[in-house]
Length: 252
Ligand SMILES: NC(=O)C1=CN([C@@H]2O[C@H](COP(=O)(O)OP(=O)(O)OC[C@H]3O[C@@H](n4cnc5c(N)ncnc54)[C@H](OP(=O)(O)O)[C@@H]3O)[C@@H](O)[C@H]2O)C=CC1
Ligand SMILES: O=C(O)C1=N[C@H](C(=O)O)C[C@H](O)C1
Image (cartoon, rainbow, N blue to C red; front, top):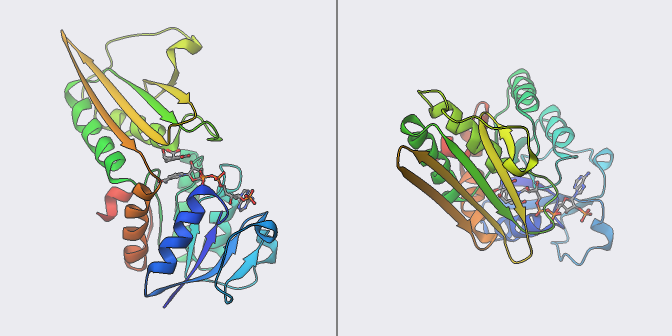
């Protein structure tokens, strides 16, 4: 039986993760972490340990599943690795430098884990297709659309998509643009436009432009259950990993 700690258990994603673990026969919800856990309406097994702060955790669990905040995620992942807990990180906001430093720590600690900007299959496929398209159509822009209370912008998925587009390019970008916020945030030569509106969950469109033609790739997460497909895969495969892997595509 794998003992899992869910960090961010009171949040929108954390609650889905708690439900998933409770359904899985070989995984136990051993612990939860969230600042407001004592006041929350979550119904948990009696055996689940509740922590409101990292400093209260004095035990190592097999897996650290994190859906918290961009402010907390680096320290949480570092803590998990230092205490021999395999991290599965869904939280956005880690910079490329932070990912590299956590991967180095994982190597030192000889422990594997996963950082996944998006656990939805449609988003993973979108990133793969965008990388392929960028080989032929290097000029691209991203529009990401999320629910109104998302804390960070641009989304982790949009940043990872821009990196994939840059990695897929074999020709330089043709167009140029001026520093103007209406033209989006330039990441790896890909302008990203972030929309935050009620009614949306998580959506992304990549627009490629060529000579007299255009290609649009779009994915939609209409329900947070879409992310649990990938979390389920990660839980099943995490114990085989010997490194801190970036991207769910590496486990599929
Ligand atoms: N990789 C993926 O597929 C997906 C990733 N995400 C990412 O997951 C993260 C969470 O999203 P979402 O569930 O919508 O956010 P919510 O705001 O709904 O939940 C955030 C959770 O984090 C907790 N929290 C806040 N501060 C800390 C801390 N210092 N230590 C531990 N827990 C803390 C909150 O607890 P409290 O209520 O007590 O403040 C709450 O439980 C975001 O970064 C989001 O981008 C989201 C969807 C899919
Ligand atoms: O906050 C969200 O909701 C999401 N966050 C992740 C991101 O920043 O890309 C994944 C998905 O887009 C949903």
